[in-house]
Length: 451
Image (cartoon, rainbow, N blue to C red; front, side, top):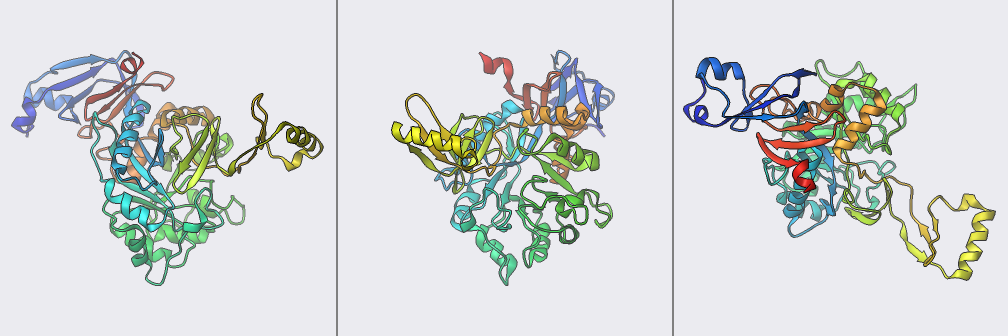
């Protein structure tokens, strides 16, 4: 049967002179689009006897599925975990700005917060289609508060929670309604966690293991209960040990349910994960690797103090740390005395704790606890490609197909197969974003942005 009469009359776009990422390989082929979906040109020609209404020459560029970021805490000054009266406008701003990095869909992420924050913010972040206004919202990722105190990282200790006697009822009391929630990160060693995992997955919510001291046995039991993801592998979990590899061991575990694939997030920003660790994870389980930014509100901003939920963050170059106390200004006599102490006992003064400028020396009491990333998705893909030596196809699928598979959206997102949503990114050979399309419509272009 042919297309519906309305669809047959709709305009057909043909993108030519390009290399499509399809079926795990880059193919020299054209991309056909109609009504926001990718079209099979053979059916168009043989069943409808039609040609394209418009052709667009892509200049030999790569066309890849739009990137999907399942862990992004904010950006460009917007903090998703702040109880703003209009949280939706902040999400819209980030959705618009990440188009320039090839992201066409994302999961706004809330870090550990008090219940009143969840109750206020979650109803303001509904699932939303992407378009010229910005990337689509696939649902919220709730990272915490049901996590390990020992491996809380940048999450505020005061707001951590464990599961009470009525475990899932406690989850609902904490978060409120789960209508807009797509992903929940929790520590599987917490009592009654398996009950919570089963209840969440039964409601279509993906469960991720993270910020945890779980051993491999506990992690395997969580996967057997329905968990499918690992939050930022290697970070905020027990280190790999040959007698008990902990959560990391899930990548090669032989105790997973038949046909059950585990996915794991990797922050390939050059800060969170050593290149050797990236290579180990990728070679152990390449089909489960999901690139995430874990971007904080400081993404797109400069050095200085910013927020992440209930915490303050200090950005220094490419690194974001949990901030300590505000800098303490020093007078020059005190400065000279302190310089002597730094020279005499350097181990007492961590790198960056003492800063000297011509106008204002100061003493800083910051931490070295990493607090998310300030690298955008396209930069993470380029670093991952360089660090692992993997193929271009593998690097691109880690930011598109794999997150779509994690969320059960691989028929519509993360692919350029016929019938899928026409969300794609145009890239040069160095994987810099030239243009971003959502539903076949141009939503960002490098040339226009530079004018």
